[in-house]
Length: 339
Figure 1: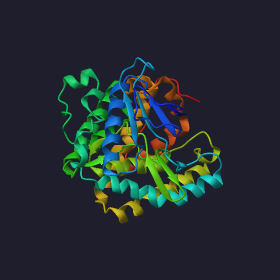
Figure 2 (figure 1 turned 30 degrees about the vertical axis):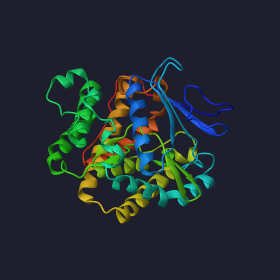
Figure 3 (figure 1 turned 60 degrees about the vertical axis):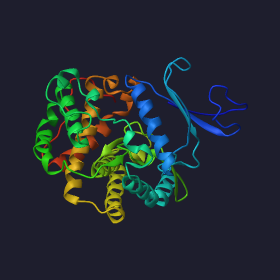
């Protein structure tokens, strides 16, 4: 959860927090709150040192005593989210003006030297801790294995623990081809890079937020995850982002704009990118499945997060995954689905 506030006098505990300027407090909830908080603070702290556009971190408090949860206090960035949901004309204008900078900021991240400013010290988001205890007892990749292997192991564990049998065929297909794409030059990856996590003012990106899923790995997976979100992100509100003619047309347009622009700025191996689109879709769909069948807490989210996993969101993502996998994908669930 995020709050904005202003200090009228110096903080005795955290004197680095500025006075008379708006700052943001983010505190972390859920079963994985401590590791998420540390990962986001470490990532933002290291990236800020390189000059990458992130909010300046002023204070990190891992102790639960003050707020019953760890928290991070950061700079309040100028502007607002690239995709505003207040009204369609404003949303389309803001998105269109900022899209070039949105893609450029992501390619800039992927081009950073991971050895610079201690970026290699960023704690991984996708680790064996995200895999069930039963799965860890079997042969699983180590936390230093390539990101692809760690992600496939997490999807496999979710498929079994859910259970999510409708994802098995597509998972088997990408796993069998993993050896073709395992080797890559590692980059810093955001893994949740989308318009609500990029702040803009006019045509300028003022900062990228929400680094709880940051890791190190193949940039093609990060780009593929962005493409998945742009191409399947159905919302209940506003109406023009629903799973309807207007919403589906907008998502198609967003995705169609993204790939050629990213490729022009940072040329990709398109065969590798297409493979990772399937992996990213299965990773996101397996997350949705676990939230519905086992509860959001099992994957590190608050219980309230389940309200975002609506039928339209699942339907749009399932269609996307089926297209990219080339085989039917279903999110079977015995649990009641939110309206």
